[in-house]
Length: 117
Image (cartoon, rainbow, N blue to C red):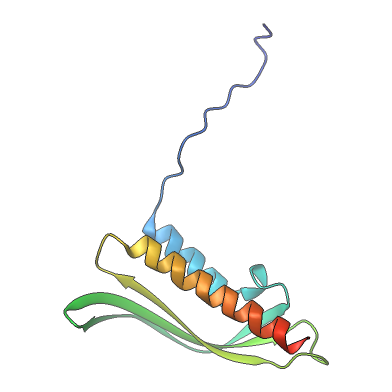
């Protein structure tokens, strides 16, 4: 057996809620990384994290109002969008954030492709 081979050990990735939220914030500021028809985003306003409580549930919320600039301005219109990121004080935070982000991405892609049909 050749001892010069590189041995790799693969295991589950470590999850950091802070890292995940940083990714969501990056996608909010740079949607072109996840939505191909978008060239860039123009941030109109952004409200930093605030603590809220509704129906005895505590959570933090950050909102950003942005305009999505399309890659093909002669065919597509700019889209104004309010992005809300919430972190709930429970163990299901990761799953709710993933669901929120997937919903936003699917909605945006659907809107852009629908307008181009």
